[in-house]
Length: 278
Image 1 (cartoon, one colour):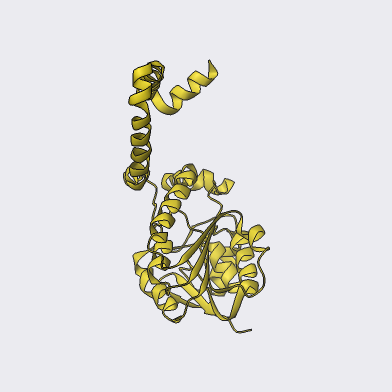
Image 2: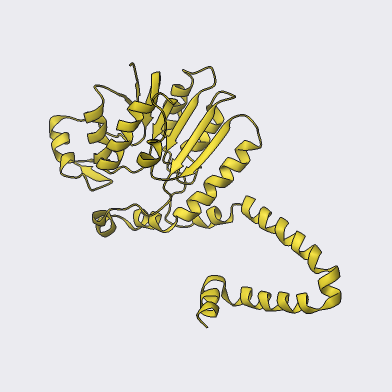
């Protein structure tokens, strides 16, 4: 009985009716021999087309979830960093989300023959403070990590058909997974995973070990360059993803971690980067 209730909750009455009709068709000798095999092929193609049709993302366009987190103003400075590299590179992106923002920008701009590794946890991430105090749109992001993963898989599938770059996709905690990599594994590392202080700081620390000499570590959402006053304010907001400073909003964890881990970085419209010399 519980299995029936679970099926009904998940698929609804129409799907249940279809299942019953399908079961009856399969029990009819003539139909099961002549028609069912063709229908199975048709349904396989239908499933493929519905996936490529991006139906979940279509519905999310009418929701309060932003599937593309990339600020359009940051596209040019991000692309300009890639233009420093004319030969194939090894790139790492931490934090991919739906794969429709920064990920697509890298796909389009990486030199032919490059390799990119995409890492994301694709699971709920909000702190207890943010669960209680953040906007509904922000909280809604915790409801759709599985859709974000499916969307990214679709983006990777489409890009690999072009046979321009090699893509590796990993669902894991970045800090733990990247501990398996050798020092100096990447030319470019882009950090846009969790913006909570302890997470982004850990990501930066391991990125500094994994970057090659002359490589670039970069990231998103550094809206303000720190002063002593802003740094002190941000230090009290380590468990908050996003906060307000006077008339400006910013990510305190990103600001703190970048300020503590780098002597200097360049920043343009919230995108930050540093060229590493070892």
